[in-house]
Image (cartoon, rainbow, N blue to C red; front, top):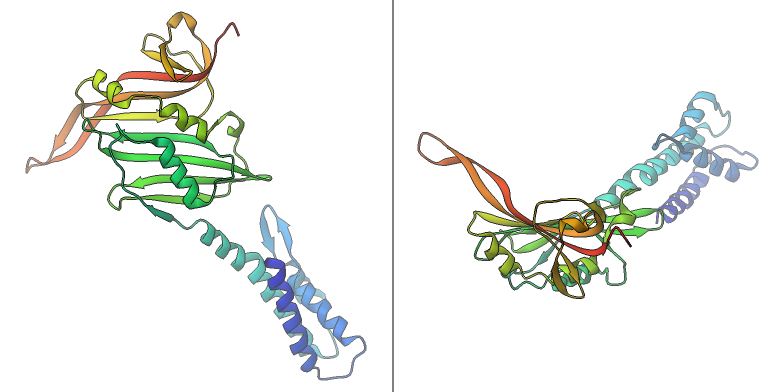
Length: 301
């Protein structure tokens, strides 16, 4: 697209400037093209693009024939530079990173099909044929199963760069809000789990039973970084998923390498009130934690 825009500007400028010719001059059309290209010549320094060609023109070029026309050619060139290297990339970036809203009503976390939610996002973003990885999944909910926060990130590789999708559910608008960016690097990419595989394992968990086993608290949380890690947490309940079944993981089997999903309750530890008696600040801490590991590699393997 950028090359097409540049070519169109060059052709239109050339036709206009040839028509504006004041004095007879040999090779005039070629000189006009040369002055245009000089004005649009770019130099990249530390990811900053500057119009080096136009600066060279101002410092060193003193034409004697068709002075005004050649000056206009170099000015049109630098205007093309501004459009192609500054304005268009900014506009394209703003368009590609604009938020996308997907209207959708969430049900109870106890009956939610997380694979279905992921499939909806892929379909709406037209990502069905991409191999996406997941990072920073989190869902917060209360005892009756009502979700208060839901978010995760999807990452896809596109040549030498990445497409990063930030996905968050807006409770007030009953819709997913998706933003996209294109980072050049993502160091932990190869350690991240495939998104489809993650949601397959998340669906194995009986969230209602897990929640009730923790007791009565202000809210509950499910978290996963999505990254394969060495797991060494002892003296806490931990389980591993195998062939769709949940089995207890003993401390004697640690350490292991695995992906894992953490579940815990949020216990209220304090609050502050104003002079009217209204709560202005609350503090919480995690409690009743239990982790669920999958794709486990035991130490002796």
